[in-house]
Image 1 (tube, rainbow, N blue to C red):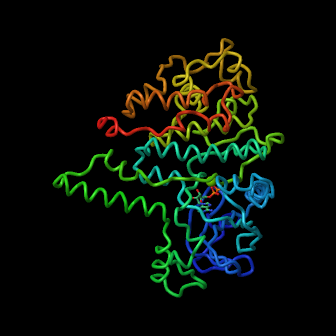
Image 2 (tube, rainbow, N blue to C red):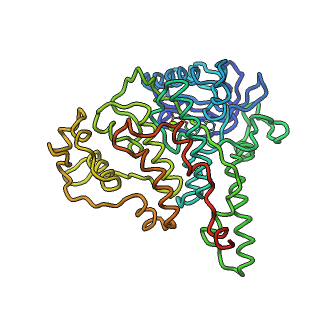
Image 3 (cartoon, protein in one colour):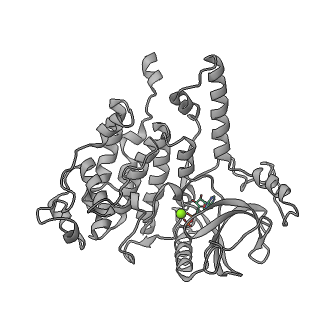
Length: 417
Ligand code: ADP
Ligand code: MG
């Protein structure tokens, strides 16, 4: 919390960076930081200001983030400049701020919109339409291809919170026309503060919400009081182009200089990381597959829990085996941690009876996908979830996948034919 080594307490109207940046509202927070919308008085634009907790380990992660954001930023004069700008968050500035809790590293970035987690929450964890899943997948893959191929960086913490939507109307680009007057000093009463902060709410989210509300109202009226179905509501969100950028490089690493054995957030963790058999770019591809599934269904692909007589890692591996089939023996017994987890035949030591519930069947039975949608999505995901990391397709190869090229026809379009 807000104590020594912790978050820096920030109030609307506070100035940072020798007075250059004025805090407007809170955008979000993570394990290590709080993130604020700020006004850059030097260039008259809105920016995202990430203020890191002050303790040494958090500063280390912020330094790491600055190193990687600098390496990937579009100021790099190579031809990949636009690629970076299109799909990876852009660094603008950084500095140190000394507050009562210690020294905080501050990172100034372009302002982005809601995280994909908020998008999924907004949809009540029901998943977004497959065409929008494809749009987002294309953004993420373009970003990953850039990071992996052009820069040589493994992100290592891909998850919904770290993927941020690009606002269609970005106040950062044109504060005057978008009608957001910046706050330049600390407002003197709280009521006033609330008013100002709520006028700069996230635009993508607002657009989605307004659309859905309008569609809901008109559908309800047409159907004489009955509320619209989930499908109708989902349709009301279609037609909004969704694009996202990869953010949060606090845990990123150079592929040829890996420092940590354990990477990734639990649900998105690749089997080779659990087994400690070494990882590379393909660990990000595993997380990517988990994300694509989650966008389509609203639920995490794997939700491991420790149980009686087995650990979270063991449950996680069991869930993988149930979904994807047996782990090839060579892989199961090949990691530094294999001896704890597997017997010499390559079977889990402490979880013996496993079901078999492949992705396509799960999509049909649990998430009510049509057979063809389930098969298509499952065919897209399966190769990315290969237990052999080197057999997983790369981001560039996945971008070429047919499933991403063609839009899924909705059921009505099929009926009309
Ligand atoms: P941490 O390293 O603490 O996890 P992140 O960089 O992931 O920090 O940022 C935390 C949250 O703040 C994100 O999930 C997102 O909601 C929000 N956020 C971060 N950067 C921006 C930005 N540039 N524009 C808008 N929101 C942001
Ligand atoms: Mg984060």
